[in-house]
Length: 195
Image 1 (cartoon, rainbow, N blue to C red):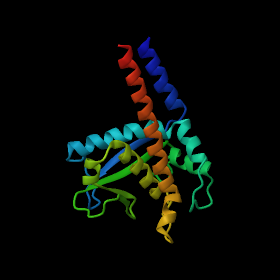
Image 2 (cartoon, one colour):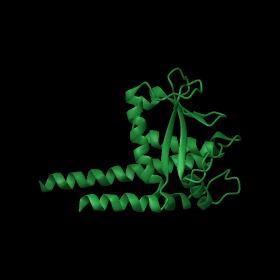
Image 3 (cartoon, one colour):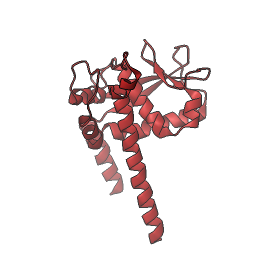
């Protein structure tokens, strides 16, 4: 019976057009590679993507973004921005709901932050990925994907940057994942007290 339930859930998510995420590995100079040569970074990236997929597809994520005001939206409503993300716009294949992330780990980067270049390659600081949790990496991936979609930071004042679409998305992902972690921790504590 459990197997049938799992098959039904997977079939329903495919029929409902669930957004998926595909990571394409690159080296820091922009050349496509078959896989990352660092298993720790690969595992963190895989974990971040596995957190991000259900989150992007969740109603809670949508509701949270619909409540915020953003700068530099290029005339798009928050609802249209969610649709852009979920449909995988910015990709080469718009027929599938697939977010394609071209990712490179930079080991020599002096920058603490991630960045997206003109070829839509997301450069992640390898040391930062090693030092921080996968929640932050998941949030960073969605923030950088917003840059791929054409949403930029405020060029005028750094203090306005936190109100732009990429930074709002990053904050929402972090908040949603923290809520999930708190709920899971509460369930674990209750389960331990019952046993």
